[in-house]
Image (cartoon, rainbow, N blue to C red; front, side, top):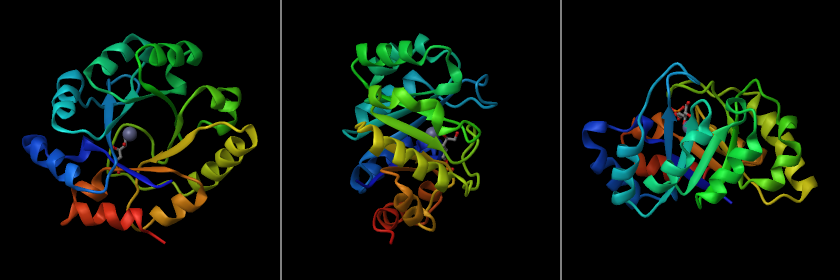
Length: 216
Ligand code: DX5
Ligand code: ZN
């Protein structure tokens, strides 16, 4: 499985309709939506009005990444605003199962994200209860950072856990990804690659997406 999920955090917000129209024509199957609250991460991005606008401009899967504290407060509203997948941070809640249930109740698919310092072992039993793990290959909070190379080993270990458990769970990787490292990340076991700056800063974003999909 190879999916590219461009992060609109790196898009031109003065021309968001144009950038979403470009994604609609591209081979990206998902659109990644980075929500930051200024508390869980030292940055603030965007929320419901922007998600609603993007929802009305595309049929693509909206892959919402919540970098917010106590995410359960808002999962219903993100689902209502158009999220197809809602991913919360393992580190942002005392009760992941409560968040999982709330996202399911809201009718969205469930992802759990782990920061670089969080080991995949914390996910153990949860793998069978979720649809996706989002492995952060940069510290969450900002686009344009460099890929943390040790993420490759982490992805492989997670892939082994998923295969051993029989869980039907995708691996998404997020941060510092481009056509230069896409092949090694897919080879390590990733199914979905998030790419922000490498897509939106590219002279030809659609071909950057294609190069990542076809990377060998
Ligand atoms: C960082 C976000 C990432 C980021 C990716 O906190 O979760 O999705 O926008 O941006 P690039 O691809 O520029 O690293
Ligand atoms: Zn993200």
